[in-house]
Structures are given as structure tokens and as C-alpha cells.
Length: 471
Image (cartoon, rainbow, N blue to C red):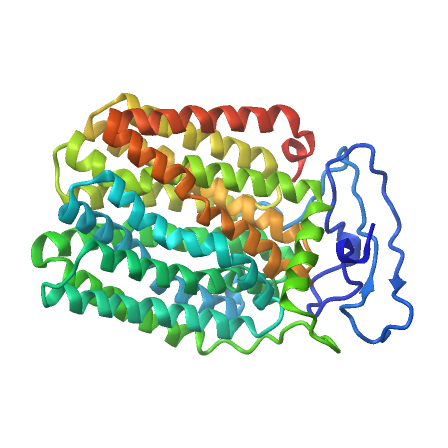
């Protein structure tokens, strides 16, 4: 194994224990190896970025039991950490604005263009920077103070919302303006999101990481439950300009909350290597860890196959259900309720069959999408949204928490940036789904994606024994 693929012998966070088997591969032929520090000759022995160790390898028949024990009393335990609570409150404000924007932007684009393809283009614009710049964002998150990156991203999102609101107010908005705003916002998020995910273990430690991720997902579910309904109502009553002004205000609130978090120092290093080298080291780290590769693949599959329905929901509401934005807001709110229940269940479950629950969540998402495709009734969709929310929240929470437990803090920003690239790959599902929707209809588009998601999940379940058994 070359130097670039080895994990450093120390990190800046005390919650990373080298004995925790960070980087355990799934390969049964890989035995448990000892950690053997090696130093490059002639290099500064005090430079932590030059020291390396062999990652501990955990056999697949010994599933790791990380996280807290199951108990409803521990459901909100990670919020006892002041800085995580502030990060969580900032997330509520930011994601509330994001959920309002998804509804308002999607409905506004479809209202302006009456084109599912252009709807896919606008949504793809926000995802493109996540694909092209996320690796740089991850490297930055492992080099500089993560809090600073988070605040910059939140500030940019709030400012863009205000500019769009002004353009709508003076009746100068066009679909390509929304595309440009989505592109800029996606660029900011490419740097903010890896930092935001990577800072969580620093704030709560590994023992409460799954709980923190579940509460993070629960908070997002609350915003999904409330924000779209508010946005749909405001859109119908006073128009999209007011919705975007509210989104801008929520961006300001998110910056205010995270500004009170204590600074979390970046990785100490005697010499900062080139960012490209940092990226290569992160990719080598992931390539040497098969279990993380499996988790990243599952994240990719759900992003490409499950996420497009959220972006194409206006097509279902307008063309299939023949209803308006308030009805779409209600559907998204119901899905948020299902997500909230699922997130709280994960938060209270702790370290119990998390790999199996991840697989079941993916199956639930695929089954829900298939039902939406074959039943063209709004009342049925309202019920199915509960199942879709349950599946989405469980797989998203468990996927991210298992990844972050598996990697060392010095690599978390870069590994999470690879995970965030999944959102950049969402257009691989959104754009074809939009084209199929224009050609055959929305039900066919979502039905095809649902069958593919179910097939991928069954293959993972059948081939990945360690994922099935891990606690």
C-alpha cells in the first residue's frame, strides 16, 4: 500500500480511537492486521500529514457495535452538546428555507415554462457544482475551520434568495435566472455541506454520532413537514416573491445561530500539501475501504433513482392530479411527517441492526415510488408519502452515520465530499426522468426508476453480508 492510501496516525479530535477499526473492508480474505506506523525517510517526523499507519481490518463475521444503546430516553441526548444544538438550530433555519425554495422554484419554473425538461435543467443546475467542486470542498473542510465554510454557504444561500425575490417582485424573472441562482447556490453548498457533516463528530463524539445524525434528519423532516405547506400556502395567497423573501430571512437566521458555535480548529499540520494531493489522498483512502465504497454506492443509487421524484412532483400534481401548489405542499408535508417518525425511531434505536435497517429503508423508498407510479390518485399519494418519508429518512441517516463512524476525522471532510457528490449525480436520474415524463408521462418515468432502485437494493442485500449484520 502506498503512502497516499494510508491513514494518519493521529487526528485533531479525541473521539477517534485507532482501535475502532476505521476503514474496515468487506473482503473476507483480509485478516485483522496490526497498526504499524511508518515514516517517510528524510521528512519531518513532527508533520502529522506525513505519518501513516495501516488501517485496522475487521473481519466481516465480527460486526462492529458502535453508537449508543437503544432507549427512548436517549432520543435527544446529543442536543445536550451546546455547539451541536446551535448547529442543529442553524440547520433548521437553512433547511426550512431550502424546502420552501424547492417547492416555490419547482412550481414557478413549471408555471413559467410548462416543461418538465426545463424543470429538470433548473434543478440539475444546483447539482452540477456538487459533482464538479465537492472534492475541493471536502479538501477545504479538512484544511480550514469548518464553521467558517458553513457560515459562508448559508450567507450565500440567503443572499441569492433575496435577489430572486426582488427579480420576481419587479416582474423580471425568467427560468434562466433561476438556473443561474441554482448554479451559484450549488457552488456554495459544494463547500458548505462536507464541512457541515464533518464537524458533527467533533461536536458530539462517536458514541452519540448516530443519535446526532438521526436528530439532524429529524430536524430536516420537521422542515419538510412544515416549510412546504407554508410555502405552498404563501405561493397561492401572495405569490412567489413573498416566499423568496421569507427564504432569505431564514438564511440570515441560520448564519446568526452558527456564529455562536465555538471555533473547531482545522487539522494541525507542519506543512499544507497541495489541495490536489489532499484530494488524491482522500480518494486513495476511500478506495482502500470496501465497506465505505458499498455505503457510497448505496447513497449514489438512491440519489439517482429516488431523488428525481421530488423534483418532478409538480408534474404529478399538475398533470396527473390536476391540483395546485397548496396540494403539492401538503404532499411534501406528509412525506416530512413520515421522515420525522423514521428519524426519531433511528435516534432511539441506537446500535441495533443498522445495516439491515438501511437496506429496508431503501426497499421502502423503492416500493413507495412504484406505488405512486401505478396509482394515479391524490388520496393514495397522500398515504404513500408516509412510507416514502420513512424509507428516505432511515436510509439517509444510517448511510451517513455509518460512513462517518468508519473514517478518521482527518479524512471526514473529503469522504463526505464524495458522499455529497451523489447529489451532483442526481441529474443522471432527473434529466432522463424529465425526458421520459415529456415522452411517456410522469408515471412511467418514476415507475422505471422505482424498479431499478428495488433491483439494486436486492443485489446489495444478497451480496453484502457485513452490511446486513453490522450493528
